Length: 507
Image (cartoon, rainbow, N blue to C red):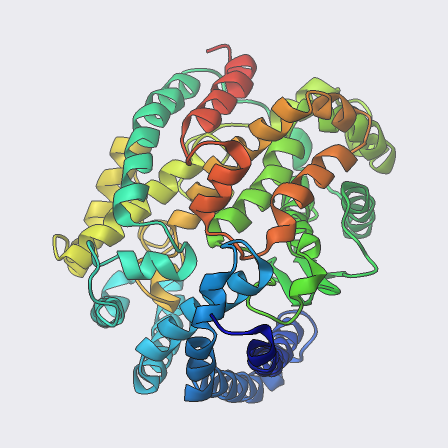
């Protein structure tokens, strides 16, 4: 076993190199944030070049053999420590990232980046003109490159496994498919039962709500939830996101529609959930690979927990609805709490994933996940994708897209990135959110009552202690088992859906 005296300089050197790389990546993130918020349109071309330059520098530094040698030299030290010690975790997670990074040739990265940039532009025009045939050849090339990327990681059971590992390491097609098959069997009859009931009246949400008042109300809400404005800020953008430059600078963005109260309010709470996670990571992990969320699914679990389990709950609005009525007395002064609550939880079969409610949303994801697996397996040709898409929408949701623009062309994921690995995290996050929230309320049954009084401290502290502080120390599977005492399962989510929407719709 290596002595501490021999190990400390090498560990310190590794941390120094990682900090330099993190600084470059953070500078690139700041440029991206500026591009999405305040940058003038004419800066786009130069900004793309600047981001590419920083990405290349960071990748070159991270894949330097010097880091590989340090990781190898530190292996005996890592093995002498407890698995969950900070030092062992840092070495282990850095090695994981390094081995994945060096497996992908730089030439392939450049080729893939150039192709997806071209594909994105063609897709944007194809969606606007309902012309899938134009983008189909580009999508065929994306499929080919996605398979090539997977093959840089031989030994997989399914060709999509390496692609899933990019976002949800530890998850595989086998584990995800098992969960999703069970979920679909439960959700399809629930959706059918709700669809047989009268649709909730959501007209109260579609009045004129001035932007300034919406932003002011949302600001007060998320500050009360626990978002630290000393370590963050909120700005407007076209497509809301959360971004982190350091543990002391975690920012959120939102989008407001003056004729739809849902849009700004819940996207703000959603992004706040992501930000609370990042603000809760141990500051000891600053500028290292440990300082971030452990997977796309776990990250999404926090945005969905705060948006849905908290933000769309009746206790939450017992506290905040009187304040909302005071903010918009003309629009909501005569709308009672129950009508508002039903409006924000309206369930309706719809064609657009991003507009879907809690009950139907996961069916949209399951459709995409199944189709991309069929594409990667060679069981579905790109030219047949629109028909396959429409058939699944008819069987799962009982509706058929009238055109490809709001069908197979609606999501950017396949057209601006790889085919495979991006969609599963949304539904995994929904499942995790219910399992985490159920565990939290079992440990602290007073949480719903506290939420009704505007007190989120117990829930937030529980999440910080059990999830947030660990950063990337544990895989998603390890974290779920550690926090909830069982592996990821669908039962908590199905119980939540049946209880909440069964009561709302009398089913």
